[in-house]
Length: 314
Image 1 (cartoon, rainbow, N blue to C red):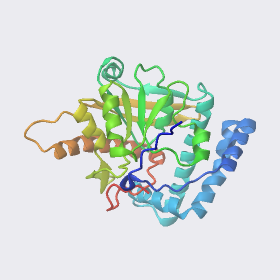
Image 2 (cartoon, rainbow, N blue to C red; image 1 turned 45 degrees about the vertical axis):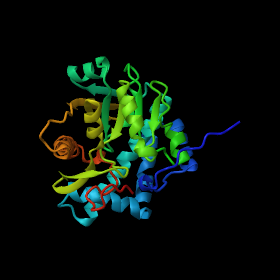
Image 3 (cartoon, one colour; image 1 turned 30 degrees about the horizontal axis):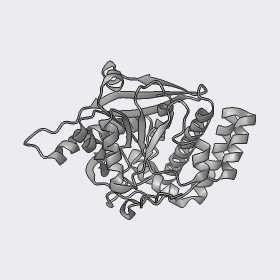
Image 4 (cartoon, one colour; image 1 turned 180 degrees about the horizontal axis):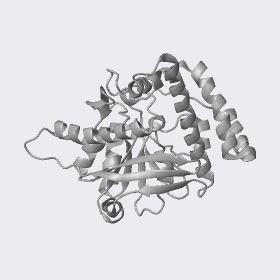
């Protein structure tokens, strides 16, 4: 029997990610949830967040890049209070994803959309780019999209922490199995993305992770920041619409998923393609800015998009 060779990973797109969490830690959370429920598990997060605040310098520094822009008048102690609160909120949403992967009816997700968006998703023969970000809990919304008549692919680095992958069962929810497209693969998975869109399927792409691809400088929270424009470029090339997905946790067992913002990127002759891409990207970033202004503790960027190193993800 001949075993096919695995495709080589492009070194330029290799992503260094610090592994956090282990099997023992997730076992503790499982036991807490089994015996004390969601509230008891949330309580444990208070101690975990304090641990990371004290001992994980890298996590704190990466979070401060956002906190200092979102709360520019905060003093030093207040900034660390914001960081800790952000850690707690992220932990709660990770727990929600774990619970939902095992109890599909435990977490409710209400959609805020428009008739045009639903008709585009359900009835169009064209593919659709679902633009997600590390803001809110897009995984929860995706788990509630089992009613859609389109297959779903996610452009996402395979989770390199086995404990996290097993706990959250990424990409294996029963309601809507999804295909993973590795951005570290050949041409960043571009061929697979185009193929999926040409077949009329949904492709989820991160709007705030460049994975080594080109970025454009756009204003975000009052400072120049670098965001990738690849989602709009591939959408324009395949004549596919782009729908932004934003989620907000409104209670312990409820989320709101907003898919009401849609663009139809089509290049116009006589204008620079890059400047047209910048216009669509600016609209998307303005949407993110409005969201974090209203929900500051649901922004989980955890990397410096304002840094001078374009395309780098730490």
